Image (cartoon, rainbow, N blue to C red; front, side):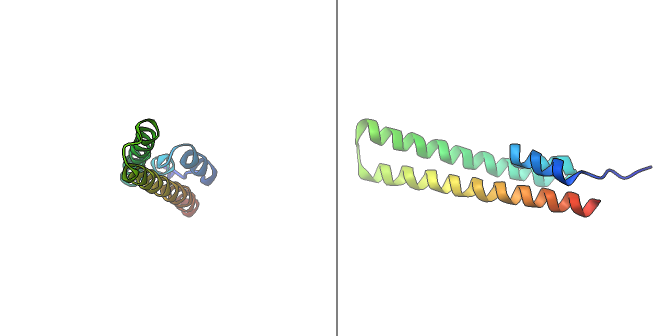
Length: 99
């Protein structure tokens, strides 16, 4: 019986397309699902921040709302970028170590 050996290039492309998908391809199901979960939270933060910014631009209620919206948006962007980079490098290194 042959052992499954994931291809590093495929793992990288899958992680680039969707964060955590490379881990799922590599067989790291638990890690991949955690990365997808935290990526989803980051996307929710980005959407929430954008909604708050939009609400400020339409209604001009308070400068605090704009600052909160920008802060939440940027936190979401930073987290999703870090998770994306981690997912790509981790998927590549894991797949490479299996070959």
